[in-house]
Length: 294
Image: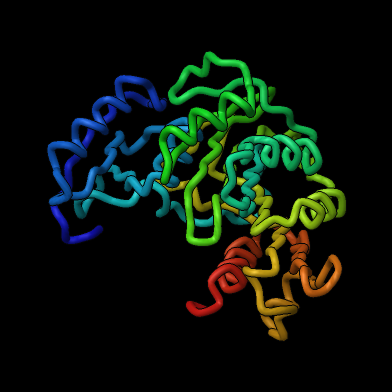
């Protein structure tokens, strides 16, 4: 953890979620810290927070901690990797696109189109907290997020999935990003070819689909949010340097350029070689996403 003082917001219960009360407490903690400390959410060690809550904390840059033997520990990571055949009950889908900043900008259509094309999911509800009580409406979503720029986040849910839609300004325009957890029926996997084609057509900055081994339903166990095995990664022209010539990448994934130059996307499909390869595939994906750190 950082050496900066922590403004800890404690959240009791085995299955905490992003309620209006928690949002109010986070705002109060941020005002009390006045830039001198890091606002942090602390749950019980055995807690299983809702995925919308975790996706919100991630997008807002708020650390999640739990008590451990040596003090506070990172709630997003820490569990050992599964060995052998481990049931997978959820899939994480994350995507982002760069919009031109304009008066006619509409946020939400990209999220709706990609979720529908990739895995047949349709957003039904949205709100700023749980439980979600407003019908999905990209026009209302756009207005709501515009009012909260330069960084704004809304929760979204549909049949069997939940997560966030985030919008933030950059020097190049406005980024729309979604991060959702979908319940998984057995070992069924999304159609990688259809997902990749939809991502290229939408000119994504990034699309990733990962099997999640730390999730059960809409909740994720403490220390288990990084227990994921990548299945598909699509990076836009501004996010890659071409097809990686790397034996480590070739051993666990196939990579190709898709689309018409110069606006080609890097499409990486990971081989389903079993859960025993989880750590290696994840390391390769990190290298592709953050080549300078590889």
